[in-house]
Length: 266
Ligand SMILES: C[S@@+](CC[C@H](N)C(=O)[O-])C[C@H]1O[C@@H](n2cnc3c(N)ncnc32)[C@H](O)[C@@H]1O
Image (tube, rainbow, N blue to C red):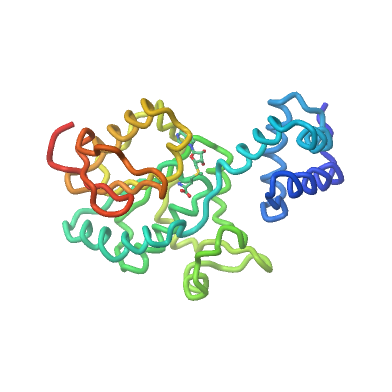
């Protein structure tokens, strides 16, 4: 039987802050407690206290917990320059073709990436026929995404003007994306390593997801993305994820961390 007292959680919070350097107070308690409860079960630990004590003395356990805690890390407009490029160049160019755009945020985590895209569509006054699919393997992250509620940690890159226009306050430091903006995004569970890829798509964002994968898995994923994209469609990757020799996937470089699907069949 797991012991999950508030005092035990507070003890773990202190230990995590001290040893992992992550302030769990910046995460929503209920969700974080639910995730950590699953973690306790998987590691056969009886309580939050036990986990707190373990990370104090066992460097491997400490590393594993850090990895677990950071794997879903995301925020609105992460890598702002990439979103600038999407807004000023990529989305207007794609919209000129005149088809309803299908945009895919793959490995979206808690939805901040997908809603950032929705904000860009609003700002560019692109109609509701342009849609965003947001997928992730982690059902817990998708549940969080659907609430559309975020704290200061996720909103650092959101200007006051954007916050006023596209969010509503739900608490002193908590904000919910407005329903009209949220309606542009459909969330769905999808495993990039197992499930068929949606197609056709015009723009795919897959950032800070494949860093944890083998080369072989990455190649399969990039090929899958290239096949999903229409010719002239774009793939945006994360700030540490440049694709080597993109031509082998039918992709060409189109700017920092940005690739364009060529006409070549793959
Ligand atoms: C660090 S987050 C990236 C979030 C967002 N793309 C960003 O850059 O801010 C990585 C996400 O990839 C998801 N992920 C890991 N393996 C996956 C897989 N096989 N298929 C789909 N998503 C996966 C994780 O659940 C996690 O939410």
